[in-house]
Length: 104
Image 1: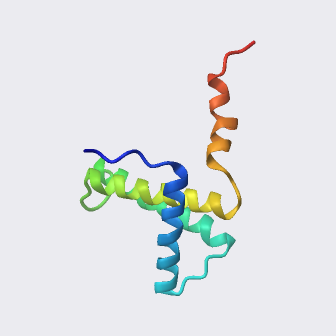
Image 2: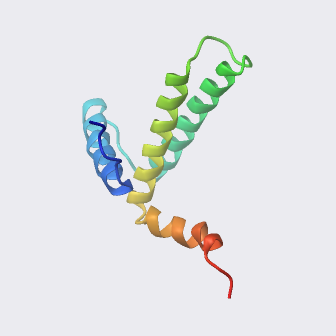
């Protein structure tokens, strides 16, 4: 039986627990800048995987690499939102989903 889809809240809270473990293990201080810079790092790694898959980068990659890096970026974005009190659900509803509402 397939697992039910995760909610953004579930992913965020799990990512926060994992981030706490990672920071403790490696002695990382996560200040405001760290959250933004870590997101940038993960975007760079996703870009590398994308370029490798399109034969425009060095080395080998596969779809699992691209998916893993996309997951890293998503989790870092959710951690960024958590840090700064951004509710991703509400932000998406306000910024994007308004375009799906009928115009009166």
